[in-house]
Image 1 (cartoon, rainbow, N blue to C red):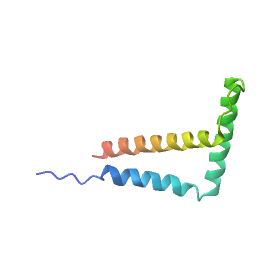
Image 2 (cartoon, helix red, strand yellow):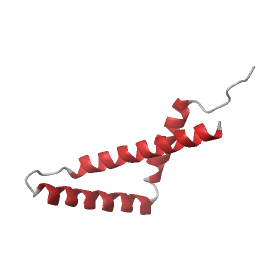
Image 3 (cartoon, one colour):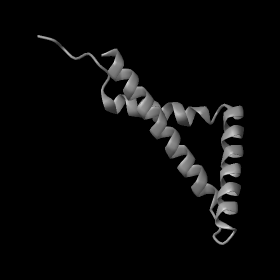
Length: 83
């Protein structure tokens, strides 16, 4: 009988969230994160022709969600290749 000794998905997702939140204690990462958020906000404003004001915090939240999604996909692909 073969036992699955893989990491449970809940633990993996918790680790992803912990690592991403922990990165904000590293000031260069926070600086790059905020600069990319500013650039994204400016690009969105220019693309819409300044008709709609884009909330900077909304852009940062979406940027953070994209990081979570990318890290989750990368770790699940790595997990699948190793098993």
